[in-house]
Image (cartoon, rainbow, N blue to C red; front, side):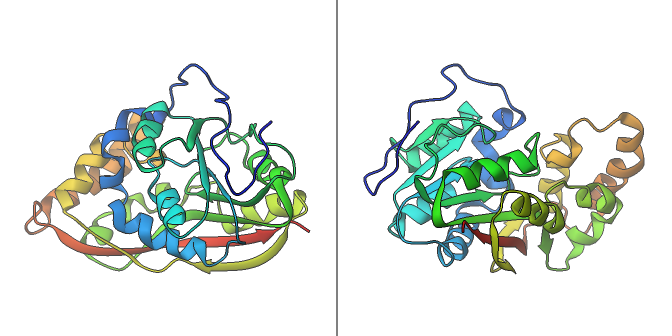
Length: 264
């Protein structure tokens, strides 16, 4: 198990061989589908406000956008992820500071981390309670766990209106505020704050969103049966394609739920 200090670097890889995960196939264009560098800067800034001084372990580092922002703000950062292709991208932003590992079995010593950050990951893990418990385990006393979770809340626009047929699918996420609060309670963490990030602004067209739906980029589409696809997804794609100037970029904005916990 790796100990953590201010000169912290990546621990020994917990998964020497690549473990295929759904995000592998979209790693090269993941940032473009999630708000790009602007999202990393905004969420990184919002997360930074709640951190204790010192090192950060980012669980589910993805392409490293948020971790890179935290590093730029003075925190030694190590990022963990299961996706080897995502880590290839993250390694360019956090050289020597990313490693393949599982959120459910962190290769980090108990009570050795001042901060753990988990952003847009808990809806993907097999056991949300265990993931939060692992984060709590590695925290030092009074260490902070900052979680960005739940469905993004977009400003009203024509794209969001076209996505209304997907409302139930998009809302069907295991990382609700209540689920995370329950997991934190079981892990004996103290609630510090429940808030929202600042607005993340980005550009995309109706065709961009329709293309991603057809490619099943979004996790709520994984494993969806064909009947549900035809009833819910196809109408949304058709509405997007039928919007005025479907290839024209729109300025969009979204916010994300952010919860903060401390280890007693």
